[in-house]
Length: 552
Image (cartoon, rainbow, N blue to C red):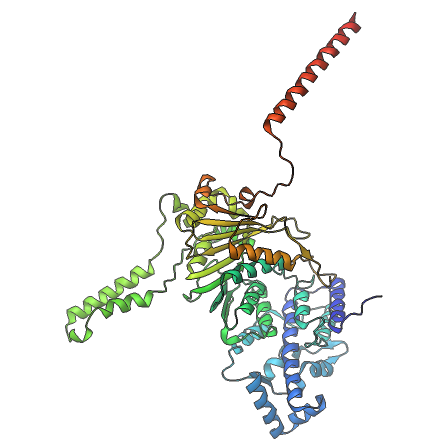
């Protein structure tokens, strides 16, 4: 018996089928993503007000028709949700009902919500909403499309307006994520198995975190997943790609993030990793492959060293002096000013001076790794997904030595399974810690020993299949991380001295033996080879004898 599709799933499949038949310019993607935000804010407010005051849509409309009624629901909306839609006609279902004329939504769709929405004075999400609407105005328009494309966009937006934001069977959030990775939008999400392992590595090492940072935000899945574990933590992020950043902001609204604890920037972290000199308890990220070529395109990269003791140094210096005793002594005051300037200069230039074999780090394409570590608090943890090239590339030997032998920053390295349907080299998870007190590294080989679960519903038209690790695999990884133990053919603990013997090659397969076949002794191979050689020699002599007889 065929399974009955949910309301949201039916709309999702319709949208994906539409995208196969027609496509529009990439700029229209902003409009499609924005439609999800418009739908969410509109229905969230409407549902809340109906819940508070009862009745249906017509009853709510009556409140809007009188000044007293409108003032009453406005106060409730601003106090409870932090925003209010001033015009009943601006609710998305009413707007599309009124403005969907001759199979075309009115161009005011771009501005209807912006003109009508009011945020409470202390609502910090206002700045992110303004960025979204300003970006929308800059990149999108209802004009410049042919008739077929106009019809496609209009039907797409109308279908989004009919989604159910409260459906549990196939959630509104899931529709948003799947549409974003469909052939229409083509945002590549972080593979779920990478997000799963990053979350396990962080949460197995930290019980609490006040601040979490993802310098390569992309689809924000790593940041939002980990921050969901550490409640009320401040979350920071950077993303250079404007469309990904736009997508992530709308995702933050839909996930109901506390915007008083959200600090996101549309910036390239490889140009400046630091975030306002903040230091973080957790850094978690999937480093994009483009960063491997960082040094080719960004010759001006610098080593950043945020100094958490910047103010403390000055305070300690001044505290040693009795300022009241200085009086009007200009010489002493000027001397203090000179000292203060020198302290600031030292702090400003308090950057590692790479010399000798480490001089090559100045131009390393992975120099940003050091900047990421510098953004950690002393007891912080960083878990990132990174290209396997980092483990063995000859030009990165000095960097690997710097991160292991010199500073003992690397805590764990985990090899990952291959992505389904992908031909690229699998990535690795690397865990960094500043306060390590043991001189070894835990290696985990997850490339072969893992179990996966099938996605509950495979939606045709999404860019690729998804690998999802099962609970048993995740529990095993967590157990090894927590207890830091070696398991045959799965994990090993390797000393820094052994790494040095291997020229700081960090390839997981070099240290975790996963071979399942039978070993063959070298002596046996030599004996077999000698027997084969003897038989060949005898056969050759026999053939030569037979040929000689034939010549006679």
